[in-house]
Length: 177
Image 1: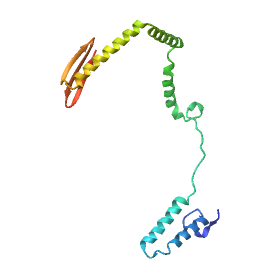
Image 2: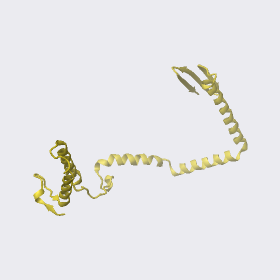
Image 3: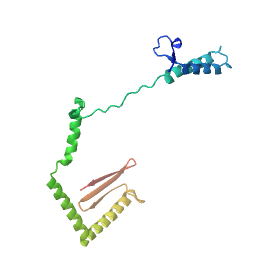
Image 4: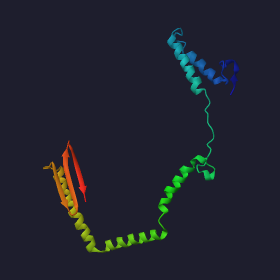
């Protein structure tokens, strides 16, 4: 870049590029038709020059990306020690179970899944229970929010009790076992 020190504004350490001078001269030439005596035209020219020199004229500042480790054990900041320790302790919680206990748990789950899939009586019992619970849930929901909904009530089946009451446009439901 060729710079002209004669065009350097007072107090500026950088040189003005010849392309910047050509731009300003062409900009000033485009304003010939405008009466330069008007304050508005002068302020537009001053703003354009300020924007050009302030934003476009500056060189981009950048630096290289540098990897910095996080863990203090590998050269990271010692202030990260408690953070890294907390992460390690949270990660260790899934390894607290012994390998033999994990193996036993997996075998029991596989055995239970195989038994439930192969036993037709157990499968039938589960389907009947699910169907009955679905019908009971449908009846309870019809009593609470259906066409002939009640203002309050109590339902009991098995060891479960459901109480509901309408208050201020809301329905409060309490389920206890």
